[in-house]
Amino acid sequence: MTAARTITFKLNGAPVTADVKPHHNLVELLQTHFGLTGARESCGQGLCGCCTVVVNGKAVSGCLYLALFVDGAEVTTVESLDTRDKLSPVQEAFVEASAFQCGYCTPGFIMMVTQLLDENPDPSDDQIRHYLTGNLCRCATYPEVMDAVKLAAKKRKAGATA
Image (cartoon, rainbow, N blue to C red; front, top):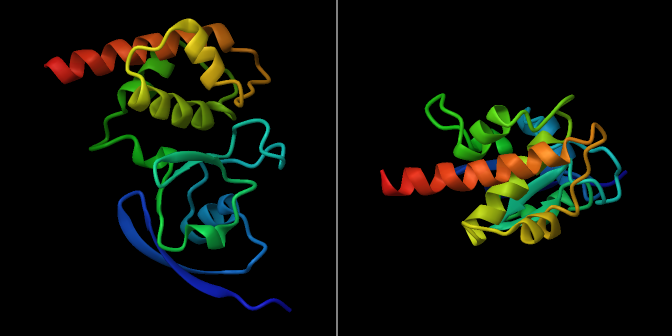
């Protein structure tokens, strides 16, 4: 029997504590301890992007990232992006561009697009494609995702100048 270890970290801006076993991954921690289901384990190999979570400002595959590694870290999930019951510009753009069908992959895409636009507010088509290569959509909404990224970039620029 493996003993649990207590970890403390910031989750979506709030300090939290959890007892985790050494083999638990970040998705398990988020779902079982905090009820956050946006990051979803799909492939279990870090290849599809459904489990994307941001740790200390960098996107990680939550299915491969051991929960113990977030001790002392700052973790951001898709659940934190809407504020005051208002969707983020990236979330709005995904809705407006119909950039999803079943929605299973959408939280991972939204997290990656948010990070992309944080790093590059005006990406080219090639930069968008390159950045999102680790996110798979089984419903094949890729053209709509491209439209959503461009729309989100415009929304962010408009919000910054407003």
